[in-house]
Amino acid sequence: MMVQHKASREPLVRVGPTVLARGQFWAIVLAGGEGTRLRPLTDRICGDRRPKQYVSLFESRSLLDQTLDRVSLLVPPTRTVVVTLQSHSPYYSRQFAAAGSPHVLVQPDDRGTAAGILFPAQWAAWQDSEATVATFPSDHFVLEAAAFMDHVAGVAAWIDEHPDRLVLLGAHATEPEVEYGWIEPGQPLHAEAPVRIWEIRRFWEKPTEDIARNCQEAGCLWNTFIIVGKAKTFLRAGREAVPEAADRLARIGHFRGSEHERWAIQQAYALMPKANFSRSILEPAPSCLAVSQIPAVTWSDLGSPRRVLRILRTLGLSPPWAATRQGPSGEALGWLTRTEEDPALR
Image (cartoon, rainbow, N blue to C red):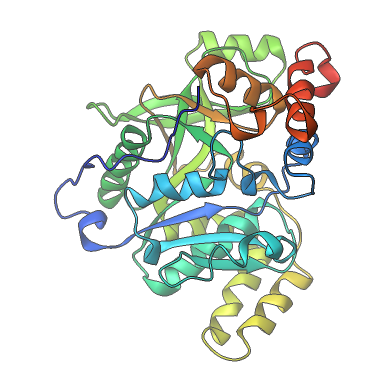
């Protein structure tokens, strides 16, 4: 059965005179990853080396398109920025050429997820010094898009009253998953439904199975890497944790809008140290961090073939590339099915 998951246009929460109503809420869509762990499957589907966010895994639209569909329920394209890599230009150049498309920030090179988040956060702050932003990885599967984005809206409203916080969204753990990062909640900061928010006691990044089982029993959450906060709070955390990278990105502002802007971006990235946002900024657990559990929606980080297969089977989906067992489509489907039998393929 082919199921279409394009975001429905259900009304979303608007709580008082928040950043949502004032037009100060921005979306950062993270599309700079290479998707190497899923490449054995995506290569068979597409016949080329395109990153997974440009692949149609569950319907006719790519994972990036589906992410933008979800985001558009809450944030218009004029306040949406897609951050990607220059090497991905064959896949994004046509998609975002039309008028009314999201703004695209092109990184000359991969300098890690710290730069991938701080660069667009800096860009949003240049547009609006009081901007609230939310990061959205482009390789997630979310079935109940309206409920999911409604929760993001509620967190953004809370941030409007607590601008010094960065709130990560955590998902309810259904198994002792060792490939996810885990968040251990601490004391409650906001106990009223539907948007409950806690301090963060600590992070458990890709733990052993025993530790993951203990995390699940203790009520820890899976880290979705969706983060909501003021752009200036992201930047402050960056300056404290990765000062050289943050400083290089800030210098681009002197050339913003000029003929030298592209050169300035190249210079900023040329000698920038590579840094991981989770390890460098999140894991030290600064006091500004908090976590909120997303509602009971179908969510998955599509980091491995095993998770793709699980969604296909659980929801009874039959994507276009699995319509036949002959040719490349059949090869991809057969390879994906074998992932259960061979742990090396997972």
